[in-house]
Length: 521
Image (cartoon, rainbow, N blue to C red; front, side, top):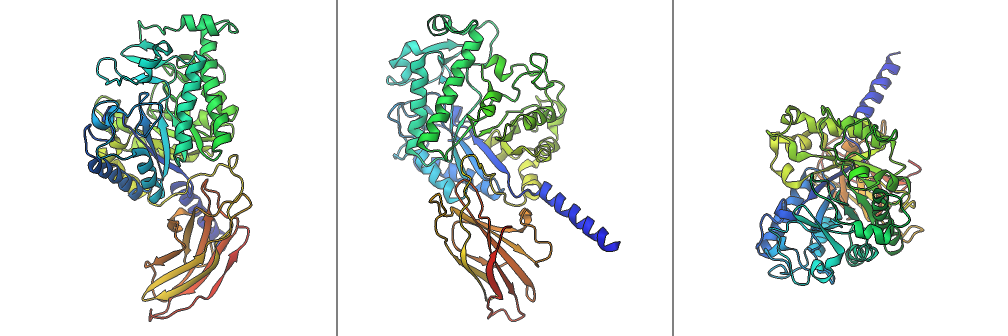
């Protein structure tokens, strides 16, 4: 009876560890460039300062066990990359059209810096915003609004591409694909701006466009939704042909529709649902498999009277259609005196993270935005590192994009040298899809009993190299090392390279006890 009780406690402990320390979880942050919100900190910075600011951000997020960043590289029909279609962004040198000084390609460089640190780089593009402020924005003579003025409408103080014009959609697909073709991005990411958020007293000036192109539709709202559908589908179809392993993700406003308008909707009172106000049928895009992940911007608290976080994350959990859902967190609200009282507690953010982990179809979190975290209000970044992100996490796999795992490492050997364990293995051959491992995951266990590869606390390294020096070992102990191969889309080898080694009191000589492959784990 006692033995059964101990087994029961052990299983509870494993379950708790997997909940608090999941082995796979998206942990991403938005790095906003418009208005110099996150990076660069201001305009007219020299290249060296720009680059140091960005690497400082990456180092901080890597230290806190994040695994992806979404960097805004096209804020307003301008570019933080070398584009043949659009001018350099004003956020770099203060005036649209001016490249960094001294010259470099920020996007190419940022991707390289992310990949060196094992972080995914998602190219965040705002597709339909053309001018962020008529009053304050710098507009280059070669800006697309100057070349094709009939493609746009003014709304509030901003100018937007008119999605109802077929040439506009074709152009925007071309803009996105230039990025995809040119750069080794891991994901293409669109935010929540499709048709603009409604402003009282404003009218979208697209009646003439509807008269010209909307003859198949009985109302303008269905036509607008179809325009956005056509654009999203075109991007999706193009990616599958050009670079099928690039992820396509969108972060819309947190509510698709309220139940009061549609029985399929969430039991909420979202003020401007995506479907009804931005003409973005986000649920449909998941259902038809046009996108790989969706991050609803659920910037309401768990105590909200209108759209509680749990109500929405549960709804998305049930409406994921086999694609990834990541919770979008409004970190900018933490500690703000202008927000409801629950945001005055750091626990609000952590409740949301644990709710994500509660639902099986929620695959992680994204935080808006970088500065909101690095300012560390209410010590939220410290608590993340100490508790919720204490250990690294692998990114979730996407089997619909790549179902083929890599082959396991070859010829793993362990040796004791001056108090440390040295592991060395051979890179395996390519799998049937032609891919070799992109990196390896090294886990260490104290013994063979109770080995649980889903326990992230046992991961000691996630790396590209085929050797490791483990200094965190004790004398007179027996260790089991397990190494898995991982490919670019985070499939792991079905087999593992396994080696056991015993440390001895005099840590100067040692030899491996066993090497081999643990099959079908």
